[in-house]
Amino acid sequence: MLIGIFSIIYIFMITIQAVIPYIVRETIVFGVTVPEQNVCHPKLIAMKKRYTKVISILGIIIFLIMLVLLAIQQWSEIGEAIILMSSIFGVMGISMLIYWLNHQEVMRLKVSEAWGVELKQVRVVDLTARSRDEMLPWPFFAAPISVTIMLIVVTFFQYNQMPHQIAVHWGPSGEADAWTNKTYFTAISLPLVMLMMQFMLWGTVDSMKRSAIRVTANRKEESIESQLKTRKFASWFLMVAIYDLTMLLTTLQFSNIHPSIAKSPVLLPLFLIFTAIIFGSVIILVLKLRKWRLAYAENVKSEIMDVDEDRFWKGGLIYINRQDPSVFVEKRFGVGWTMNLANPRGYIVIFLPLMILLLISIFSL
Image (cartoon, rainbow, N blue to C red; front, side, top):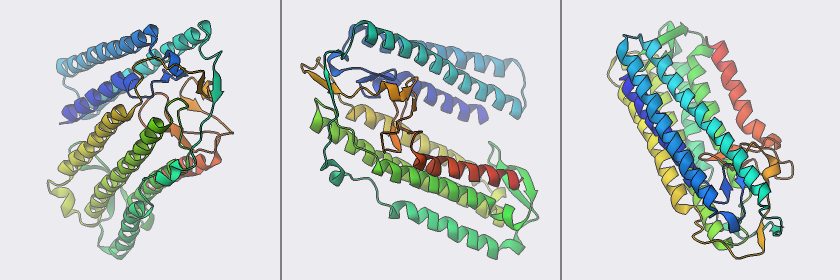
C-alpha cells in the first residue's frame, strides 16, 4: 500500500514538473521576462522541449532505480518511506538544478540579443477589473473554521471520557502509530493545528483577492479574462483544500474522542479520499491554467512591452518588491502563487501560523 501511494505521488509530481514550461505565462520563460515579440524564438522553444524531455527521462530512471532498490531487499516500513521520499526530493532537486541552468541560459540569450531594449516598457492598469472579480467571499472559508471551534468545545466536554493516551501520528495503514499523554492542551492540539491551517489558507485567499490584477500591455482584455478566471478557480481550489482538510482532521480528532473509530476500517479510505481530492484538484487546476494561458501564435508587432520585473525576482523564484503592495503573485516557475517577501502582511498570513503550528507540535509531544 505504501509503495502504491508514493508511486502515485511520484508520477504526479514528475508529470507536473515536466509540463511546467507549458503552464506558466509564455512571456515568462524559466523565470525570465521575455517580450511578446520574442516568445516564439526557436531557442526558447527548443529549451522548453529539452527541459520536458530531460525531466521525463530522469524521472523514469529514478523511478526504476527506486523500484529495484525496493525489490532486491526486504525493507522495513520506515526504510521504504526513506527510499521513496529520497526519490521524490531527489528528482525535485534535479529539476530545480536544470531549471536554474535554463534560467541562466535564457538570461544570457536575452542580454546577447538585446530583447526589449528598443521597446517602451509600460504598466497597464484597469480600475474596473476588480469589480468583475469572482473569487469566493469570506463566508465560504469561515464555515470550516466554525466547525473547528465547535470541535474544540466538544473535545473539552468529552475530555474525561477520552483515553489517557492521545494519538498524534497516523501511519500509511491508517492506524495511529505515535501517542502522547492526555492533557487539556494535547487533547485539542489537533484541532488547533487544523485551525491554524484554515486561517493560513483563508489569509492566502484574502491576500490574493487584494493583490493586483496584472494586465498585459498588448493583450489587455485577454489577460484580464485570464487573470479573473485564474483567481476565481484558485479560490475554489483553496476552498476545496480547506474542506478536505477539515473532513480529515475532524475524523482523526473524533477517533481520539471515540477510539472505536480508529479500530474500524474508516481511516485508511479517508486518507485515500483526502489524497485523491487534493491531487485531483491540482490536476484540474493545471489543466485550467494551461487552457487560460495566453497563447502567442505569432510574434507581436508592437513598440511596447510589459514592465520588465526581472530585478525583483531572485533566480526567477523569490519575489522581493517593496513597490508592489501585492502579498501574493503568480509564480514564475511552478503552479500557483508565491509570496512577495517585501510585504510584511505575508509574514502574518504565512509565517505566523507556521510558527504557531511548530509550537503546537513541540508542546504536544
